[in-house]
Image 1 (cartoon, rainbow, N blue to C red):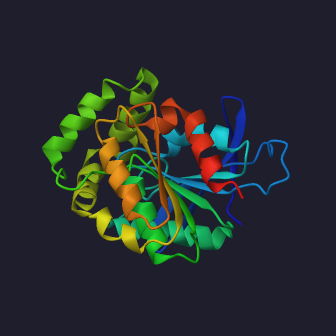
Image 2 (tube, one colour; image 1 turned 180 degrees about the vertical axis):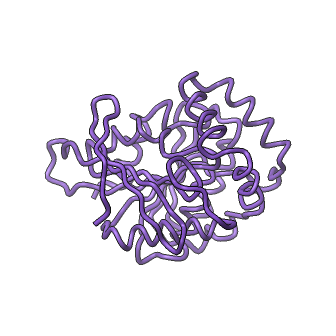
Length: 264
């Protein structure tokens, strides 16, 4: 059994651990279910996967909300957050396989796997490769739209979007980029982000899905989110208020969408 360390976030207790799969290490935060909301339905297991450059930290406000409905696992992918820097190149598929190995070893049953930004590329790859492990996914601000996968374009959009984000969200993102991921690893990961055509695999994903976008997101426009939802055979679309980091700026609305879509 992997050793866990108890921590606190705004009054919520969570537990951190590390594990290694095929020489790639991840860090995990587990928020235990705090209640079942007074209902007789079974609790939901949530697994949250972050985007490029950042870590699971920006999921913590959402995790606290989701823990009212079930157990929540936040994953730091290899090289991000508290996970050690890998010794080799790590592709989108590598990240997906590490999450798959974590799910299999942990025995998490019927998880709703949630990705944000690049995390949506990882989650969609996971759902395609391992439908036996994942039959419910949520794609938040689902990565870069086709035709716009250029570094300068995305850097400009990200910079403008940050003007719409609250100061605390920008602090979490920037400190993760600079001090926890670091520029060298970020630059090694960028080609995988920009070179991945998520739209090619979406029609083959059988998982129950919801795509959620912020109406003020300059990185991932709602029109692209609508296209992503339409490409998923079992996809739905939800638009909420907010910019790119919607699960940080409005965790209550995101939790409500997830519960409505995936409540057993």
